[in-house]
Length: 111
Length: 488
Image (cartoon, rainbow over all chains, first blue to last red):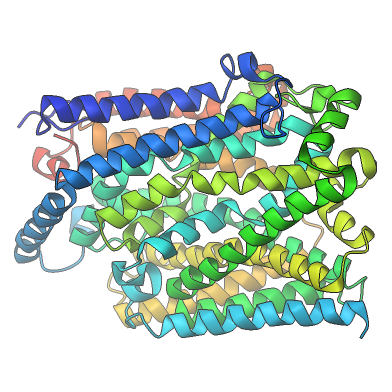
C-alpha cells in the first residue's frame, strides 16, 4: 500500500471519484460564493424575490444548492448499497481489532 | 390574572416539560461512560438533526441574530452563510471518525487525535483549548437566560435568579441523563424554537409594516446600506469585505470542529444516520431567515435600542402582545440558551475528565469512576460559569475573540490525521502551539489584522507552515500505525 497524501481512496472507481469530486467542488464553490469576491456581485437590493432583497435571497439559493447536492449524493450512495458495504467492513475490522487488542486505545506504553 | 403571571406560568410549563423529557430520556441509555457521553452510539436521525441544529439556535442566534440585523444590517447574513457549508466536511470525514470511534472506543475529539499522533500531551493541550473555547459561550448562554427572565417579568425575577432556575433544570437533566438528556430536550426545544421564530418573524414585519416586502421596501429607501453585505461595523461605518469574509471562513473551518459537536459523531447510530444529518443540516439555516426579519423590523420603528441584542425582547414587550405570546417568547429564548448550554456543560465535564485528568494523572480510571467524575465536574463547571456570569464583572470580549480563532487551529489536525501520512507528533504539536500563539498576538495587536481579517486565519496560516515544516524535519511515524487512520 502506498503512503501518499490523498483525498479519495484508491479503492474508488472512476465514476465514484467523479461523483465525490463534483460534490466536493460544489461545496467548496458554495463556500467561496458566500465571500469576497463572488458575493459582492450578487449583494444588491434589487430585484426583490419573495419579498426579500436579492442579497438575502441569493444566500437562500446557496443553502438549497448545498442541500440538494448532498441529498443527491446520499441517494446515490444509498442506491449503490454503500452503507451496507461500509457497515460490513467496519464490523469485520472491529472483530479483528478486538481479537488483537482487548482494551484501551491509548496506553502509557504507546506514548 | 396579571399578564406577568401568565408569562411566568407559560415559562414554568416549558421548563417542566424540558425537565420531564430530559429525565425520561436518560432511562434509555446504559449506565456506562459511553452511555453517558455518546448515548451508546445509538442516536437516530431526528435526535441528531436537532442536537446539531440546536447548536446554531443558541442564545446568540435568538438574541444576537436580531441584534446584528438591527444594528449592523446585512453583516448578520454571515450567520446564515457559515451554517450552509459548515457541517458539510462531516459528510467526508465523519464516517471515518465514527468507525474509528467504534473500533477503539473514543468518546471525545482529543481521543482520536491523541491516538493518531501517539501523544498524551496533545490530548491535554486540546482539553485546555476546548475549555477556553467553551467557557465564554457557556457564560453567554447563562447571561442570556437571566436577561430574558428579567425583561419579560419586568424585573420581578432578577437575572441571577432567572439564570439559576433555567440552569438548575439543565443541570438536573444533564446530571441524570447525560447526552440522552441533551439530545431529547434539544429535540423538544428545537421544534419549539422553530415554530416561534417563524411566528414572530412573520408577525412582527406584518404588524409594523404590513408585510415582509413592504418592510424591506421602506428599509431600501431610508437605509439602503443595511441591505447589502458587508453591512455595517459596530461603530456604524461600512464593514470591510475582509472582515465579513474572514468571519465566514473562520466560522466554517471551526464549525465542524467544536469539541461538543465533534463528540456527537460518535453518538450517531450508523453511517446512514450521520450522513443524513449532514444532508439535512442546511435546512436549519432557513429558520434563521425569520430571525433576520425580526431584527430588520425594529430598525425604523424602534431606533436607538441599547444594547442591540435587546431588540427582540423590546419588540415583544412594547407591542402589547397577548401575555401568552410573551410567555412563549420567553420560553423560546430560554430554549435557545439551554439547548446550547446543556451540550457545552456536558462536553466540558467530559473533556476535563477524559482528556485532561485521565491522561495526565490516572490512566487506569475505571468506567464507573469516570462517569461519576464527569457528573461531578458538570456540576462544578456550571457553578463556575454561573458565578462568572452573574456575580463577576469578568469581561468576555477577549475570550470570545479567542475562541473561534483557537478552534480553527484544530483544522490542520483533521487534515494531518486522515489525509497526510507524513505528519508527525512534533509537527502537529508545533502547529497547534504556533497557531494559538499567533491568534493571541494578532488579537492583542489589531493593527496586524490587515483588512480586518480575523486572527484565526493568520493563526491557521502559521499553524500549517509550522506543522508541515516540523513534520518534514522529524522522523515519519510507524507505517502500520498510520495506516489505521489515513485514506489509502
